[in-house]
Length: 220
Image 1 (cartoon, rainbow, N blue to C red):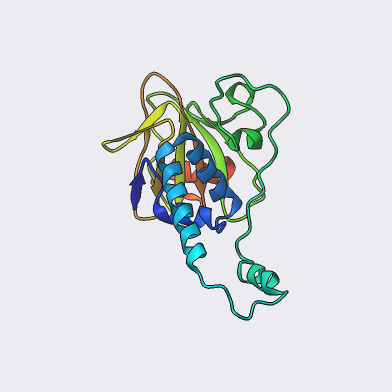
Image 2: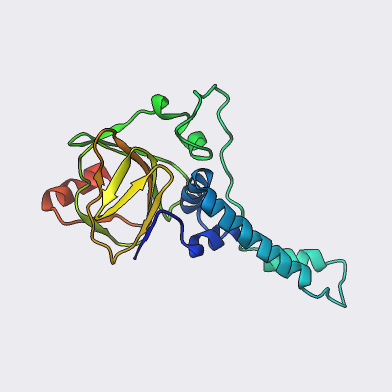
């Protein structure tokens, strides 16, 4: 599977229902801040859900504990707590939208990158979510990411610059959804480093044995 540029309905529905873990929710919320199309799609989903709720019949035997019973039925739908925006002034216009900017403590000039080799850098983002790995990636202009597939789902959101994956171009606000059926090698376009938010639920599977050897050290 390789869904391009916009989020799939499945991710939007799970986000609207509060069913995503914090790592996925951060990726979806950040994409929504940059994508009017997906915001409209989410609003339509929420509007449809609201219309259905209005048409649901009221229980004839409603009692004082009806609200408590309803909350129990919705117990699995818990909102993700978003960290508060830092108090220090952010340069305008900001490259990193909220809620991502609060997670990393500032905008691009404030970040401290960790070298991955060959000019690439990353920043691991602590979400407290044990189901996903969340990171910012900076890929040098014109350079490829090592060829890889996945052991689970991956969301890659472009924040600055752009990259090509096959014949497809992904620019700011575009998101690529991939799973273990996709073997690919994204390449940052010329002229500007590509900065992405990447969320994965398992380690990447690289075809290069050298990269696989370094993988435990690089934590990718």
